[in-house]
Length: 380
Image (cartoon, rainbow, N blue to C red; front, side, top):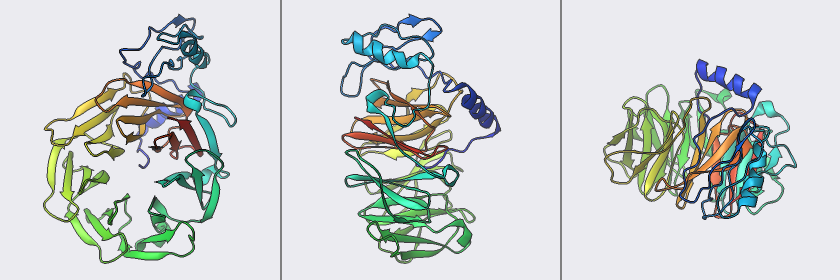
């Protein structure tokens, strides 16, 4: 998932957030098992809440002194509230936050940016400082896999797929390289029209053209690109269950097309959109200050979560099994979780930057990229 675009007003908000810290007023987690929030001087302390597994830790407070936590383990919940004493603060190296959140990598040259490449096997990959790094899902230090100069990169099946740098426009190329030998590149397609994005499934890669609006498909092993959806202008897209889904900027709809080819199918109105993700049963995306869901076969969308203020921004989203995670905030961000049926919303962690990628495995959650230069890891 790639960076969210901000308008002038949002840039001003971001500057204010950078000065004041988090500042966001995300609605409190809704849970039948949640305890009552304790009031404390200077703001609200930690509210008792539940984790995805029905745990009992309370969420961190927002600007107040620690308060008595609710729920089965009041002591643990109250201790979590102590994090709110000074408001949301960016997690520093060596510090540990909720769910064991830690900063596991910082780019040496923050100006060059840091971008997620995704999870492949037991490693999570990212590019920073002109190199590809591998980070063990189980925990441990990041290791260098080799030099890398590409855009919109992703990993799949032991390879990295990416588009050559902007300096090569308008003759940009789509290439692949083994993660064990990044210097050995294979050109998969030439003459790309400066795509906004690149996604993949087991058999093909999909990218868009900016000038003559369209979505193209090319075999994952390379070959002649096919114009899969003429006239499409995707905000974001994802391949799932034999279909390519996308949020279309011009039609303002969630649409899909069979990956084997066929007519495009409008599904539901979207009212704008941002980062998106998919499971076997639903498509999720961020739109404004809403977390949206479309269940396969439904005629309407569902709002899974809605921020109570515009002071902040949804930055990235992922879904794993029956849980959806998203990052909310600017300078200091929060990670929230909610069950796929809309219940059990809770604060999962806080203190990351407004990253443009969040990814999850059975055991860990990672946040990285965006306006920051850090990689964070938490336990699930």
